[in-house]
Amino acid sequence: MARPADDPTTDDPVALLSRLIAIDSVNPSLVPHAAGEGRIASFCADWLQTAGFEVHRLEATPGRPSVVGIARGSGGGRSLMLNGHTDTVSVAGYEGDPFQARQRGNRLEGRGAFDMKSGLAAIMVAARRAARRGLRGDLLVACVADEEFGSLGTEEVLGRFRADAAIIAEPSQLEITVAHRGFAWFEIVLSGRAAHGSMPEQGIDAIDHAGLVLTAFGELRRALRALPPHPLLGTGDARVAMVRGGEDAATVAAECRLTVERRMLPGQTPDEVEAEIRSLLTTLAGSVPDFRWTLTRLVARAGYQADPTWPIVRTVIEEAATVLGAPPPLRGEPFWTDAGLFDQVGMPCLLFGVQGGGAHAATEWVSVDSIHQAAAILEQTALRFCGAESLEPTLPQGLG
Image (tube, rainbow, N blue to C red; front, top):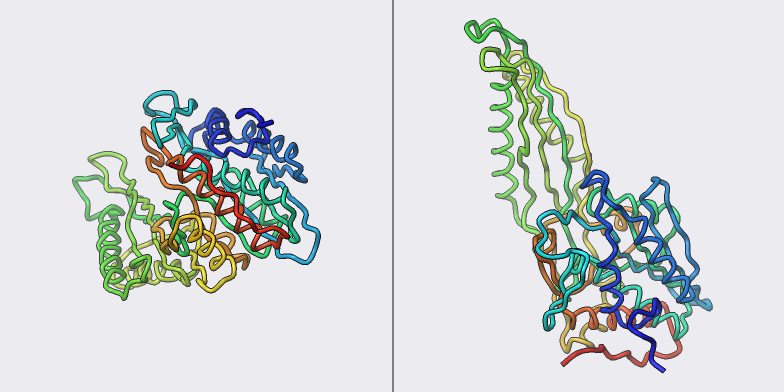
């Protein structure tokens, strides 16, 4: 007898996605006093426990829990971690009820439908199906907090758990993301000396010095864009994101603060780009009288590059080709993802997820067909990578 669609252990990832959308999990680091991940983490923990997984709840930051479910293998196989984030961005300005999944033909709408509760549903269902058929290696499902802001969840999970490889189910249009750029944010404080606006020669204008920094960053940006591009990511970039300075119209500014961003390619480190910016400022200080500055690194994340010959990459390509009818393209992303953290600890990983659109937008949607396809591909990947007695494919449901 078939289980009802709302059974917590259902094999239907679309039904599970609808339940996940209904849970408010807006990231409180983005929206003060938002719901956060507590309720959705409890739901995922209960779902995984009912499905027979060994469940661990991690909450080093109070109110920001992540959950890891483990299906222990019988031995002799490789381990695999499937990773998905539970938090979403704000629902302000969303058209309609953001917590009510609404299906229109092959589109299912709701906040998080694309980014990335669909991926979360796909990895949970795929892992349950694979575990039920028996695995030799361990299969881990990581439902992580805070990907949309600071990646607290994946950092905490990687502090406790490792695997031979990982798949992050971020939406990728059923293509395989094998590279993304890194980023670093810095604050530059320029110190001048206040003076009356009628006698500016008695002061040191920090805003005037900020103009020199803006010019220098423009030159850096042009130099970066002139370098040979990465085949998937293009070039690095640099820009001044914010400028704050001055007290009133009649006073020479004694201080000006600039927030700057540096986007970097795989292989470049935050230390290297910080040294680059320090060199730029040191050069200005050597040629401009009374140019005084401090530089503070706010946050920095290195880029990521997978090796296409890794077993996990080859396995996903082969299983995706079986389900989709052709090998999926390899792609790069201009933005940063949690894959950078896996790369830093030496765990081979890739990103693979659903088709759709509207991430962070007023209407967010996912292709229903692609949810079934992603779940089937992830199930077969787990069986192949971890090792299983039966490799007969589970055909995607709901197609055609």
